[in-house]
Length: 597
Image (cartoon, rainbow, N blue to C red):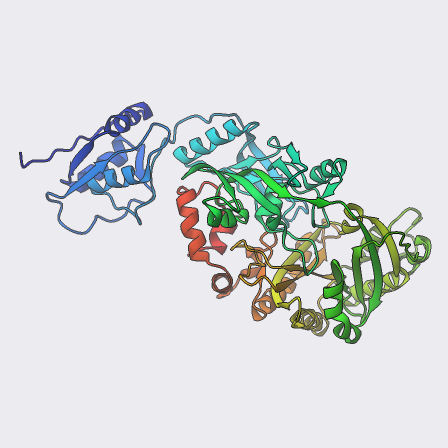
């Protein structure tokens, strides 16, 4: 009576700690803190299985008779946060905001085999990493077991799909989780017009399956080889001022987390707010293993391509956004040419006005190449993108040379004016060119009823910077639009349904390996101008394209974080991330640094 005792289990095995937690489950333990420094050292050296995330300073107050009631709710596989926090508080360990203490088992073997020392690269080859381990679960249960194990051991398992992100968003040298085996269509619901797929399924596979059922997706990117998990987690987009980013197509998703287990989330479920956060989590909130997407009946598009000038575009811009389902501009630096590509649902019986034959369209680029490189040989069979690359490679960092290439390209587009009609899947995909550096932003530009023209002002301003500073900026500066997203971390997030957003991408082609480092340096300067202007217009960056390398230098990283906090509820996101992934097994340097508190 009047006394309290503490039992400290100093066992070298996970089993002993697990048994200790099991025995505590139903009862309460009165914890007496005495000589807490000795206890802390004892735990750290003799029993490293139970450790806080950071061994901080001694807690304030006396080391005397401080009593804490522990109501344990833990198991061998998962230590409840409240249980563990209470336990370490009773032993005199510093707790951080009531979280950060987990049952840690660093020596426990992985539940599935991993490939070791795997060389990884993104699609463009601009970012690489050698992953110490790459895990490839084949079933939902294997994925869930792997996540629990990684949480216990602190092993990084950054999710990766096809690696198409230009910024290498999924790369993590300490460990990665491949979604390649977790693919396939689960079901197509014709009544609800939805498709349920595993998150490793490629967008192209989804489109092919939907074709069999007379359905399609509302919108998609120019490339369709992304896995659906990464595609939606970064809030990717197509184009159309009345069409939202792709995350808005998700109606249900399954999220595997260390902190809360496997969650089934939906727009109408009890965790609807969490569902909206989880749709765009950059792979840091958990592993999306399955998604259900809303679909629409497949349709034919009538596309028109023509060239215009900035003055004419300002007069017609609002009408184009309001009239056409899809709108895309390609601005050609060092010329006054803007290529306009618009499309809408084809009217029954409509016919397309054909343009020039391809042989005629290609003559400007062929002529320039033969002038600059008389020994270029036969050009038969070379398409537009191949010819442009062959001319650019002759002197890719010379602004005067690039300007000549751009002028030849502008003439190509003038000869390409015309129309075509086809299935939306064929019309919306287009040639993106070869390996390239890219940075794309997103910023508000008014409403669908009243566009602000900030989108036109923006590209006119960045084009002016290019031409004044002599930046070797190849064509195009590509501009697209979406309506708002309700996902809080989408670059197009807005609480106002009528808001629209413009997406502007700048590029520099990596024409040859020898000059790749110099091209990278030149593009960094170009991207910095683009980034600074993005902040001026109240924008953010596509999550698959923001690159820390473009924010190097005095105060630039702090500036990036400042503007991200202005644009997003970063504090809310980090709090949620801490609860779902306490050990940060899904994060990497890019996500951790850009979203640093």
